[in-house]
Length: 171
Image: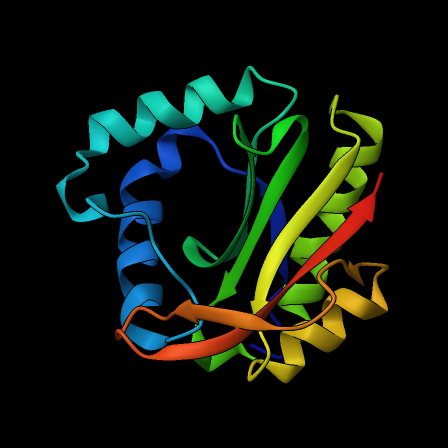
């Protein structure tokens, strides 16, 4: 990878099949990344349509990290009615073989830039498992702050109860 450049860019409808494959691989590689239930039943056509819909909003985005023609990371913001229209939930994941190379930081920085310059969101929120110290440090480094007074338990993809905290950034 030393002579290859990773591109971080918004997802395109043509990324649908590769994005579904990336999400499936990420779900199998990490117990700190949760994929929406039923993702395995999403067709390429449905994912394509969803990407097209997301690109037309000012409250949702998908960024992908691309090496050659391979998707190796993803960063998302998803507005949630429960959270309020001005708040978007952030999710970031990178394939394990590319950890420690700054791709998570690049994805988060692009998300923050998008939120500040192109979205109608006022704040970004995320939940991070406290055992995921690298991610927690990354989020703090770019300006997220803990917004829960103490950690609380969440259930990870393997069914294990683990400590987590919520973090917030005003944009």
